[in-house]
Length: 445
Image (tube, rainbow, N blue to C red; front, side, top):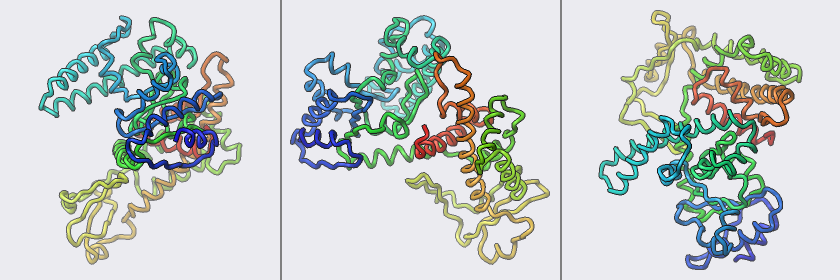
């Protein structure tokens, strides 16, 4: 089996290879031997990534045996875990400088201590343990924010930050607590499928999703127990969909309200003008014309009120694709929305066929499906425009930067622009995620 795996890896052909063998046939041992042998031959940045649904199934012992040396193993193999697991296991045992013992750090240490005690003593209060876990997750996020801010303030680029964490005693603790800092340096990376589906926070530069990163470009990915990964991936996609729920109408309102050239820097305005000069179909002018038409035709400035008594709250369903469905009261199969000029809002009714056709008013009624469809098209055009806008802005900023300072990348440029639109974190994440996926598909970043 080792030779079979090596042949596949050496061919460097894109595709999915299935290898079905019975339990106890030495898959883990042979896989580890093949990974080690191939890793020794790698001369570029190609990565070998091993995924499994359960951390206990990661081939750490088999790889250690393949390298026959703990030093060589640690130099070539990185086991990536969730930030939560790293913090819970390590933060109380790692000494950090006094300057980093902030309120966020001290609170995080206290929450980890309480959590470890509750788990060790097997507390029956699951809600209390979950509350502690949520507090640790939030505390970890705050600590990483403080670390990132400190590193950016003291070091001008990614390589300098990494060098400091690797060699300077004042910063070595960061690498011990968050080994993901050194992700790029390893040939073999081990992680769970769940971790692979999440963002990788490396602190020295912007975090990224593995699925959308250069890290997996030409990478060789082993997936242990392939069939069992389906439920894990599906669960992660559902969780991500739930986290990304957002009011698209409110998102449109915010973009329409704040997309004003006078509120942007001279570099951003110059970048915006360059989009128009390039002959692009999506320019600031076309976007504003499109947005104005939607705003006027559908009265988007007004609130929308649903007659909730017509919705059966006991029959609300969430499906695996993240879509939300509700069952209306019997006989109310038609949705009608109309302008309520007296209360200055849009009222939404759920009615039967006869009632719907009796009450509809072509002058005041609004077709919500059309509104959402047109907003969705506008957001698509906005994303396309933002890619070109950000590319121009990135080029302008980088041309003025000193060579020792990190160059702005496209994702950073898009993020900077979206912040000026005063979007919420969720709104920025929604636009950033979908926009960067579009960039990835075009192979432009």
